[in-house]
Amino acid sequence: MSEGAVLHLKGRVLVGPDDVRDELWVVGGRVTFDRPAMARDATTVTGWALPGLVDAHCHVGLDAHGPVDAPTSEKQALTDRDAGTLLIRDAGSPSDTRWIDDREDLPRIIRAGRHIARTKRYIRNYAHEIEPEDLVAYVAQEARRGDGWVKLVGDWIDRSTGDLEACWPRGAVEAAIAEAHRLGARVTAHCFAEDSLAPLVEAGIDCIEHATGLTEETIPLFAERGVAIVPTLVNIATFPRLADGGAGKFPRWADHMRRLHARRYDTVRAAYDAGVPVFAGTDAGGSLAHGLVAEEVAELTKAGLSAVAALSATTWGARDWLGRPGLTEGAPADLVVYGSDPREDVRVLAAPRRVVLRGQVVG
Image 1 (cartoon, rainbow, N blue to C red):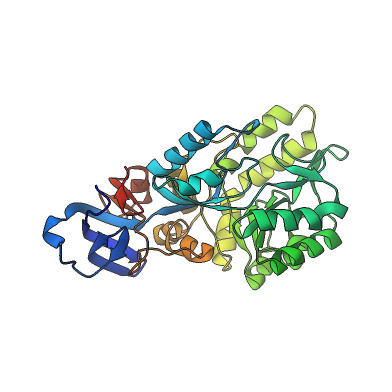
Image 2 (tube, rainbow, N blue to C red; image 1 turned 30 degrees about the horizontal axis):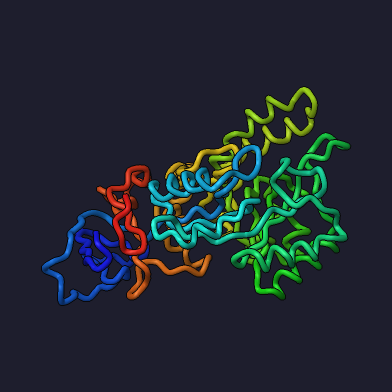
C-alpha cells in the first residue's frame, strides 16, 4: 500500500471484548469508523481484527550472552512484528535501540532502560550490577533513559545459601521506588521467589515479572495494591531444564525451581481470580526466541483464564495499562487480522492473515 492509500477492513473488528464492529477504515495511517470519500478506491481486507498484540515482557537488543548488534536487534523486532506483536514493553536491555523508533516498519517499544541488579546476582553482561547504596542513583538514571519504566532484579540465586534470595534491603527499594515515581516512572522487578515479593509491594512497586512465588498470603496484598504481574509462562516452562543443569551445584535452588514450575498454573489462576491484573509477556531475547506471543496467550488459558481474558492480556487490557490506544477513532492503525474468531480459540493468534502497522500492511 502507498502512503496515501485507504484500507477497508470488513468482517468483525474487536474494538473491545464487548464492542464488535462490522468494519473500519484506515485513512492517513489512522483508524476511522466513518466511510471516507475515497472509499471506492480502498484496498479491502476481510477477517477478524484485533488491536496490535502486546508483548509486555520482551528484550530487543539482547541475547543469552548480552547486547547484540543492530542487524540482530532488527531481526528480533521483525520476528515479533510478523507474529502480530506491534507494541513491546522492553523489560530491560543493555543495547541502545532508539533507532527503532525511526523505522515505520518496526514495532513500537516502551523501554525500561537497562536491568539494575545486585553485584554478581544476575546474568553476566545484562545489568548494571551495583550495591544498595547506589540503587537510588541508578534508578533515577534509568528512569530518565527509559519510556516510563524501570526494571530491577528483585531476587536471584545467592551462592552463599544455594537458593533464591532477595537482592535489596527494604529501605533501599523504598527510596528507589519513591525516586522513580517522583520522576514519573513506574517500577517493575524480576522475581521468582516467595520472600522477595511482600517488601517490594509494600515499597510501592507497580509490577512484578514472573511472580512464580505468589502465595495465598501475598496474592491479597497484590490485589489490594493493584500490582500487576506478567507471568511469562513460556519462560517458566524452562525451569525443569534449568534445575537439571544446576542441581549438582545448587540442589536447594534446583528443588525450589521445580516446585515453582509445578504450581505455575495454579499460581496464575489464583492471582487472576483474586483480581490481580495479569498481562502477557514472553521474556523473549534472553535465551528464548522472539515471536512467541501466541504461545504465551495459549499458556494463560491453560492457567485457567478465559479466552477473552487471555486476549485482553495482550490487547485491550494491556494497551490500556501501558497507556497506548487500541482500535479507537483517530488512533494509529496498528492491528492484526485473523481468519477466525480468536475468542473461540486463541490458537488462531499463531496464524495472522494480515499485519497492519502505522496504517501499512507489513505482513
